[in-house]
Length: 444
Image (cartoon, rainbow, N blue to C red; front, side, top):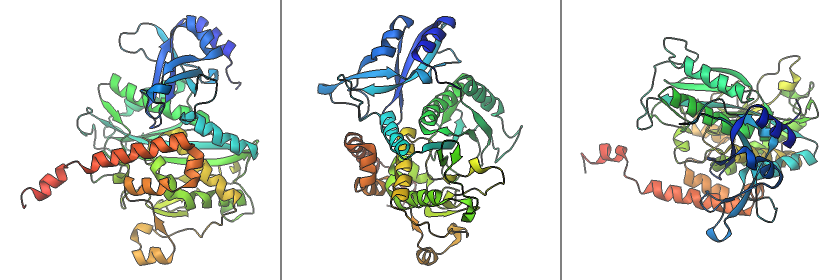
């Protein structure tokens, strides 16, 4: 389907009597930001962009250099399928690229970081495709992690009381041009998953941002709260965002080789080896919160150990089995990201690691076919299986030393991200938790 142009957008706004157009962009931490314009301003916005103050946006600018320009991407135009509080008029949205006043792309814009990495892949002849699986929880409200049901994996009614929520969410997604593969109740009580059909990484990053907003908005309309917090409840599975990914040249999947072991090409093997080698460095991007590391612990289906396999879901990377006639479906699944990461940055650093593996012809180690959680530490050491960082501080210290991540993110965004995450850790480590009260107060 042809991408929408500026003239297409102007025509659609007139035809559908759109009253407001929301211009969306994302801050460094992955929070959706935006402002609204009227149709009278739209033509000028499409031609020259709209100015805004970037000094209050996380990672964007200091006060003395706060002026920014948001330029809408007409290909992302969609009509929002719900009415916001007190709103009686039709509303549409477009994602924006952020520029400095002189016309230079703003290097702190996460969308620009991903576009820059995609341009590097394109220069090599590749298109980067991803298909994320986002998990999340429904709770009664935002103040307590009180589940709506006691359902489990693939459960149906009456155990899965959120079927209507998922149905309304999927319908809203489809109305906004998001292709859904399937949805189901996840392993934990009140945990759910809606999987998106793979697409190019920039389109998918925009869709992940839209997905998260739709899930939360539909939940609000039903009087409940949806959260993408990685580990909201102790003792049960957290929420992940497994990312299926592949590289194509035209309509040919560069990861597929009919004669290759596991039907994985040399390109696919080197890409996978690059991800494995650099996994510790990119973990602070794909798992960016203190709470992310409460999910990345053994025993709860989240990957901890840096290895790959085909059937073994305790591995960091899974290579799904090849099905005859499904060459385009050959892919790898990177399993450590969580759904609260910044998708633009997460896709960018994964691609950077994979491309470096290809460029330097990294060799892929043998697969880990045993359940790694059941292996003794000495067995893992003998097999050369290392672990992901255990907490945000360790992850940040590893990222801070990474030339790969620094080059991928760019100096401005990299510096902000490291400073912000160190501040988060300092704030966290000073807290007195309920665990400490329960454990120490009665005995000390």
